[in-house]
Length: 185
Image (cartoon, rainbow, N blue to C red; front, top):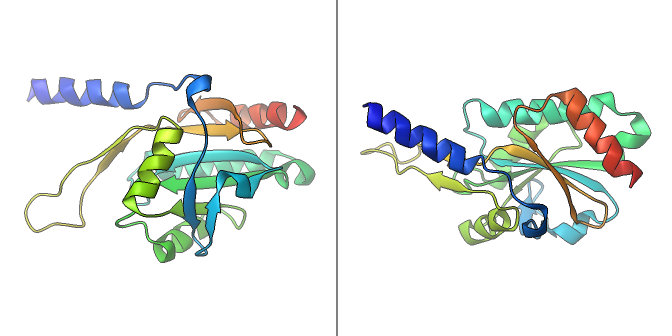
């Protein structure tokens, strides 16, 4: 038992390792929760605040998205209009366009949910150096499983280049302050 706890802790630390700026390309081709195909270039001119995860995540993902929403609320209306909050799934099997649309509505109308084929979502995760591992479900529970994944908020400049990665424990004040810095660049 103890060995499993140590292994799980080691995996969690590995998954949470920050990505060096020069390695984060921020490129992707995915589908929005409204069914549109988009790339990173589709958001040119806007600052992107992105998180990766999955809608069935029991705690980290909804907390991160709530933090992102609260950070937007701390910005002025003009500042917030220049930011696109994006949630990209690492579980496209369950996070369909329709499911993402319902989920994203809980965080605000500005939020964009992204999904795609497993190959598309994997490529997007690699572009952000996001690590994830889907744990196969036991027995007959084919749609009941957990996904270990990197947690954090990525800030991308208006030109799509990497600006910062904030840990999933960053509070709304810290996220809003960093957004203001990126907006001023």
